[in-house]
Length: 381
Image (cartoon, rainbow, N blue to C red; front, side):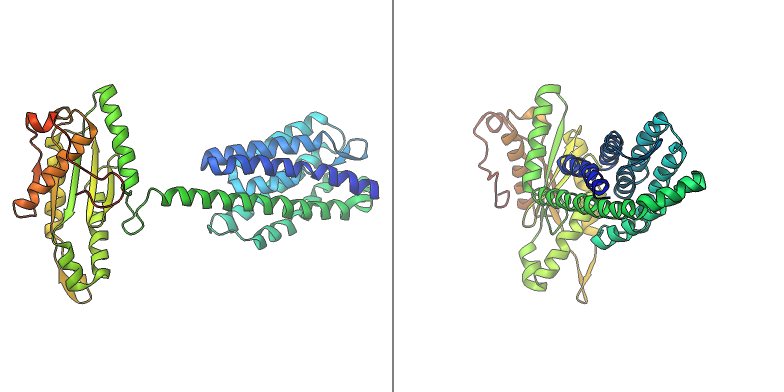
C-alpha cells in the first residue's frame, strides 16, 4: 500500500508542472486564448500522467487525469474543459483494455464536476475563494461511479484495493493544483490592474495623459508612414475654479465625470478620449480631417451647453472651450500639431469661451519653433 501511495504522489507531481506552465502564461493571456492554453496544458498534463500510471490489474490503472480535467473545466469553462477532457479520452481509448469505458466515463464525470463548479461559483463571481475549490474537491469521489461499467467482481476488487486512497489523492490534487491556479490567476489580475492604472484616469475613467501621448505618438507615426490623417481636439471646462469655489470640489468631480461621459458618447470607439490634467481633456480622432473634427467638437460643445447638473439641490450649468488642430499636413512635427490645437483652445478662451476654434497655422508658426508644452505632468498650458 505504501508503494501504491508513493507512486500516486509521483504521478501527482505532474500537477506542479501544469501549475508552473499556467503561472507563466496566465498574466499574458485572457479570454478564449487563456481558456485554450489552460485546456491544452491540462489535457497534455493528463495524458502525461497516463504514461506513468499505477496499474491495478490488466487494463485497469489510475492516475491524475481527472484532477486536470476538473480544474480545466472550473477555471476555463467549456472550451478549456472540453479540450482537457478530449485529449486523455482519446488516449484512454487507444490504450484499450477492460477499463477503457470506465476510464473515459471518469473523465466525462470530471468534466461535469468542473463545469458545474464553473457555472455555480466561477461565472457568477469575480472573487473565487479557496472554499469553492474545497467544495469542488469534495465532489471528485463521484468519479467512482465510473466503476459501474466494470464487471461487479472487478469493480469490488478495485474499490477494496485502492478506492479510498485514490479518492483521497484526487481530493488532495484538486485542492493543491486549484490553490496554485487560483493564486496565479489572482496575481495575473493584480498585474493587469496595475498596468491599467498606469494608463487610466481614476476620477473620469478615461485614458490619462500618458496614454493620450502614447496614442498620439502612434498616430503621428502612422501619418508619416501611411499618410492617414488624424485630428486633435483639446477641451477645457470654462471657469472650473469658480465651480469648485462655489459648490465645492465634490461637485467639480461630478462635472468632470459628466463631461467625460458626454465625450465618450459623442465620439467613436476608435477615438481616444483622455483627461490630460485638471479640467482639461484631449480627444484624438483617427482618419479625420479638421473639418470633421470641428463637427465632433461642436457636438460636444452644444451637448455640454444643454446639460443641467443637479447636485446638492443646485442646478448647475457649465460650458467648455475647444481647440481643433488644422489638417495634419499643416504641421511638420507632432509637437507643432499639438501646439496648434493648444493655440486654438487659447483663442477659443480669448473669444469668450463656450466656443470651438480650428487652428490656422501661418507659415512662420508651421516652420518656427513649437510652442512650449509640458509632455509629462501639469496642464496643457
